[in-house]
Structures are given as C-alpha cells and as structure tokens.
Amino acid sequence: MTKLADRINRLEESATIAMARKSRELKAAGRDIISLSLGEPDFDTPDFIKNEAKAAIDNNFTKYMAVNGYEDLRTSICSKFKRDNNLDYTEDQIVVSTGAKQSIANVVMSIINPGDEVIVPAPYWVTYVEIIKMAGGQPVIVRAGIDNDFKMSAAQLSGAITPKTRMMIFSSPCNPTGTVYTEDELGDLADVIAENPDMVVLSDEIYEHINFTGQHHSIAQFPGVKEQVVTINGVSKAFAMTGWRLGYIGAPLWIAQACTKMQGQFTSGTCGITQRAAKAAVEADPSVTYEMRDAFLKRRDLVLARLENIEGVKTNLPPGAFYVFPDISYFFGKSGNGMSVNNASDMSLYLLEAANVALVTGAAFGDPDCIRISYAASEEVLTEALNRIEKALNELA
Ligand code: PLP
Image (cartoon, rainbow, N blue to C red; front, top):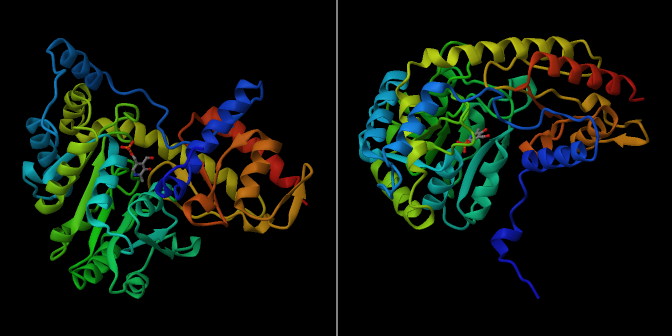
C-alpha cells in the first residue's frame, strides 16, 4: 500500500497550474481554448540578459557556488535595493534562490512553528497559504473586498493580531488583484507592525516594475520596521524570466542566515548560469522594463473597457501587475449551456466549457465572488477572449 505523508496530503495543487494543465489537455484534444490563466509575461527575455547566460557557459560558470548566491550578484542586488527602494542591505543579508517561490518557502519554513499564526490579506497569491500549511502554521485570512480596492486596512491588521501571530505575507502590486498600496497605506500598516516586534512581514514585491502609478514603495522603508521585514523580489516578471528560476530576499541577518542553512540542504542554490544572467537584469536601468509595462497598461485598459460594458460584471481599477479581478457574483443562481453557476469556481468551469476561455476562480485566491483574468496576452487574443466571455455571460439566465 502506498501511504503519503500528512504534509503532502494537506497540500492543494496550485489552482493556476491546474487550470493551465486542463486548458493544455483540452487544446491537445482539438478544442480552440484561449488561456488567460497563467501569471507569465508573453514577452521574450531581453537579448542583453540571454547573452550573459551564453557567456557564462563559455566561461565555465558551471560549478557549485556559494549557497546564498555569487557574491558579485549579491552586491548588484544590494545596489538595486538602494537604487530602486532606498533600502540598505549588505551582501550577507541577501539570499538568492530558485525563484521568489523558494525565497518565500525558505522564510516561512525558517520562522513558522506548528500552531503559529500567519496573517494573509485576501485575495492572496495561492502559494502563500499552502507554504504556511506545509510548515504547520495557521493561515489567518483577512478579507479585503473589491469596494476597498482589495486592500487590508491598518485596523483590520491590528484586529487580526493575537499572541500567536508570527508573520504577515502580502504582495504589492498584488497577484491576483493588481492592487498597489499607497505610501500612506503602507505607513499605516507599518505603524501596526512596529507595535508588534515579534512579528515578521514578508513583503512580496515581484511585480515592482509592473506598476502604472509610476511609484513603488517598500514597507521596509518605514522607520522602525526594517528589522522585521523580509523584502522579496526576483527577475521572473519584470524581465520575462519565469523559466530561469531566480528570486531573492533582502532580510535581517538572522533570517538570511536561516534561509541559507535551509537551502543548503534543499537545493545548494539556484543555477549558476541563471545567476550570471540575472546580474545583468538587476544592474540594468529600470527603463528597460518600460516597454513591457506600457504594453500591459494598454491591455489592462482594453480588458477593463470591455468588462465594464457587460451587465453584472463589477470591476475596480488595478494599478499594477497584469491581472484584473472582477466580481461576478451577480450571475450566481443563473444557468446556461446546461450548467448552473453558483460560485466563482462554477463560473470558471462555465467559461471554459461555453466560451473556451480558461480563467482562474477567485476561490483559489480567497475570494469566491471573483475570477482572475491574466492579461499577459496580445491585444488580438484578449479581444477574442472578451468577445467570447461577453457572449457566454449574456447567455446566462
Ligand atoms: N509572488 C507572486 C505574487 C507571484 O505571482 C509569483 C509568480 O506567479 C511569485 C511570487 C513567484 O515568482 P518566481 O517565478 O520568481 O518563483
């Protein structure tokens, strides 16, 4: 008999990866599926980055390296934190990992004991909750709805803190909502965090450069909290490098050392060739990312304009990332194509069946009234997808 460990049985499959797999299977079976389900830029990695990887192979960067990353890469990451975020970190406070996903896992595994509480504002990125569960921690979900632009207030944060609270995890710009916290809002959250010195904050800033407000703020910038904050970033989204697998943290030294110890046993660090390429990315002037950002802004406006014209779809204005997260609860209780739609998961299945468009249910992100549409696709593809969605929604009665 096969018997798996409790920790794997507790784990959910990633809903975004599951939807992408389902749409691939349907495509392979001949269905004309448009997938707007994955969080991946549809651009190519810039040539100046690829060239560094080619040179790295020729120059034999092919051996084990320091577990926390090549020292000169960590120096470049320190300069990036100073240049873009006005944050001072030293090389030993940086840990380079196999994607921001592993960066997050390292920190949670290093800090959370069974029974510890971790505050997660919802909607949240699916992986946070699963990693917390894997560590035996207790996710404490704080719901922030569309009417508050999906932002948790300082009062909500304060109300969720108990003697068991050890951590809070959030992203700004946010996956799945595209929400960006303003400087004042982050300052208010920072005040609450500073009053709770045993609490660590994971600030996931992977979408930093896909921000249409023109300004990115890091919560570590606020006085009195830097020693409690781990700033997470990486190259996947800003430089279209999802497959290269490199993320990093800037952290208090004791956390950075714990993460290095953890990854020393798990992976020994991320690929050396990727590290040489990522060095070029983090050293590059952020203006190299503007072309992609501007394309995303045009697409966001296209998608929003179309959704706003569909009766019953409620939207807000997402100032970052490449997602919209409309509330579709108006349609609950209606039916079409032989299917009834009673929640967001039903809606994502209905749109897959009736419209051949793959999206992800908001339930996977902690909001069962919404669906996530990734607009990391060409304007042509988005227009066709929206034509299909509009028709299918209008057919619900
Ligand atoms: N954090 C958020 C909010 C994300 O959306 C993603 C990817 O989808 C990640 C982290 C992971 O990024 P990486 O590809 O660097 O592991």
